[in-house]
Image (cartoon, rainbow, N blue to C red):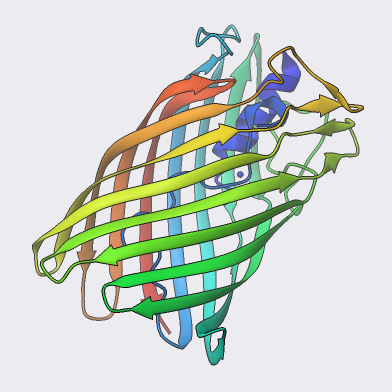
Length: 291
């Protein structure tokens, strides 16, 4: 039971964070509007804020799995993006890094623990293309175990293993105001040497279907989907008959305000179809400012 609760907390730390104890290292719902449209050459600062709350951990049958479960996480994640003027295969070369700072509180089975600090950091090169109304990009993320971890603690800010994540983004931006965007990825996890636990690889996608109701204001239906495809294992053996494979669908409203020199967007996401994970809701805010 404690194993399940520990990474449940990791999941909620948006470390940009099935997986051991129900956690993952991708920030589900972080991207929405223009997810595949990268900016021109220059330096850019992005700030993500996420609050995640869940009072239930759903098992493989969809029923509550952990008595007294609760998790609350607040994360601020600065992301630095540098787009060069160099092209490779016709795509503009860029790089980014993300450093999540999280306050995490978790309860399970009569125990409680909390922690504040740096989560697992993310680094990646990327390529970006633009063709008329179509925009797309690819990246190769490396998630590094910079977050604090102690296998005896209920709350952990890091996963204590590396993850590798090829990913892509796509946007169709219609001149009449429609924005259809998605970001998708496949995460490959390494083994946690402290527990001999290897979290199964998984697919994840954010999506957004939006429309500019005013020149500077857009509304959207947004959310995410995550499906674990490989079993969780300990010593190479599946941890349960179902492999403790996680799944979640999130959906909710989104809004964006685009000013001349910055943009800010927000979304509320409610989770459904949850298996082997915390089952809750999430609020995201994202601001983009060029340097």
